[in-house]
Image (cartoon, rainbow, N blue to C red; front, side, top):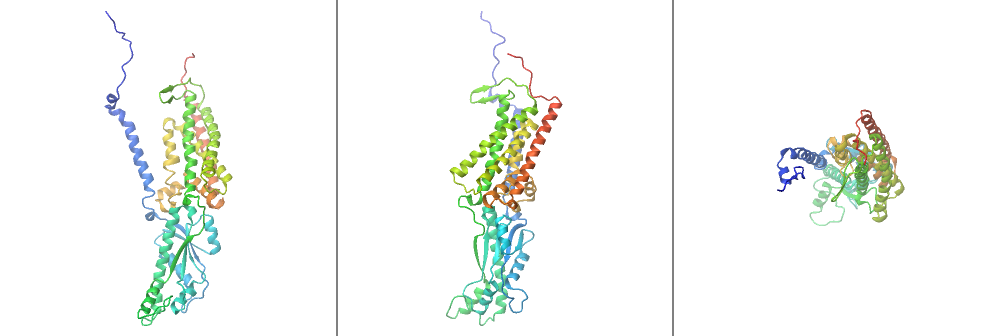
Length: 440
């Protein structure tokens, strides 16, 4: 009679049997739900209403008008107009920087203003000629854009400046019409004949100013309309974030603290006795070395192959390497401190919270206050300002590069201090990672 081995292979579990266990769903379900809620609120909360969240968007207001005051006035038309523009801005939405022409060049080339509204030198003379009928052209105001600060921010600034110019034109038109006798009117800028000449002139006086828009600080044609700085920053952060986690997992697998699984092949190596502090040191040294390779490849691909405009390529490489190094070391420190959930924590620190507060696509002046608070210390804002200064503003320190370098230094110090403080604490408490194994 055949017998059955009571110690035979264990019966394998079935997927649908396990799926009926509520506890199996609980932790991943709650965590995924929280992740979806937080990411939705963080990402969409920063971009759904930029106009409604405007707070002191810096725009230059330049009065170059050199004409004498018109009769009955103590100030020329340009001065009166700029005062009306500032007074007519709602609340604290716009920070009008009243500067001269020389100051305008500096503000645009250092990325301190998103655009400008410029009153020309002959503005009072042109308005006077319009009233007296000697005009050959309409008085013209100029709106300047600064695409190096991003297409959206530059566009918002241009719309604000154009609207301010239009409102000033309507207000000035009321004053001009009040000074012109209704029966006679003022001649139009172009010859006109017929009974409607006076009506045409008064229609012109009702909205007398023309507005022209042009680029105030040009950037290269291979700059993604000003977005190449943001995407290059994103590349630096993502390669460091993903690369740091790859290094973390690879080292743990090689030292026997994690399984290595590629397709159907599963490997667990013998555990190498090593302290948490020495493990972190190994991961950080590898991060510093591998970031040299990834940073060089990013520059080669974007500038060498794709032709991205990069007038200071060497500076761009050095800054991007140090930025990637700071992020990579931060990833290793967080993973060492938090263990299995470290990758989720570092994802929020370097990606989820950093992207909407970077100010690289939507200006920080056009996002809710919470994101402006995050932008004061979140790494992507500091890095994007530095890379933008290198790409578009001649690597000027006051364009954000000096702050970028300072924050990279702070990030490196914090990563090293936090990471090694936590691992040394765990080691002193005897919280080792290895489990003693019998030798083969």
